[in-house]
Length: 349
Image (tube, rainbow, N blue to C red):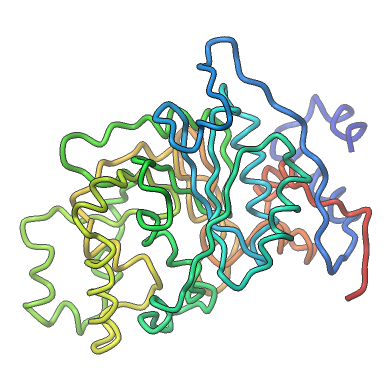
């Protein structure tokens, strides 16, 4: 692979990416069990504060980052972790908080993460979905109905109370800038979270006619400049979340949804109902989302105009699945450079 890259140094970027994709597709080995390579060790820059491991869990100076990890998305999670570490100026000051299903094999997940990232500070948090499962309504894509997809709603209760602020990231993204810049975004005096807003999106489409025709419901957005925002990248003030009992407020909308069918799109609409118009907007470069296409076909998409710090494959099409199917999109080659999957192993079930 390195020889191929070196011999193409004079070619246009898009042609280079295309050629790399062809090379990768030709060498993909189908596997059943997932094995991951050990990542390189990354070091703090001299300017970083020194935080000893016993104290990092509750350190206000540490960067607290939360993600979900499960069997279906672990390949994406491993790539996301690598991208965070590789571009961080202070990787040893990051505390990773991984939310897992209460029924998952925690020992196997812990061993998998540790084998690829021996120096990573992380904790696993089993999420008992028994309380949220009865509130989940079927959506337009079955993957959105996974209870773990709703775990971000419960971060404030799952994480220790000594953690006051957290950066939440989806598993289908990679960072190409220092995560500390994103995590340091100020939330002002009252806001609970910060995320990328898209006020040009058709906000009405995120809710059903039943919602908009009911004045008691639609007045929810009165006196708010409500815009769509993506919940795959969020800076969250957990103290304000706990004080405002926002988990319960989201659950109340989910209860209404079970009775009246006011939206179709998984865990996103309840967030919009509670927070839209009241968040701190983040520069779009921190969430170039939609690279997985829509929720039906998952077709290839290009980047939005402007700078890029986070590439996010939200939507049906995931880069690892498209690579394995030998139908990659052009931008999937960028994700593949962070893929730790060890394709030298091939096992039967």
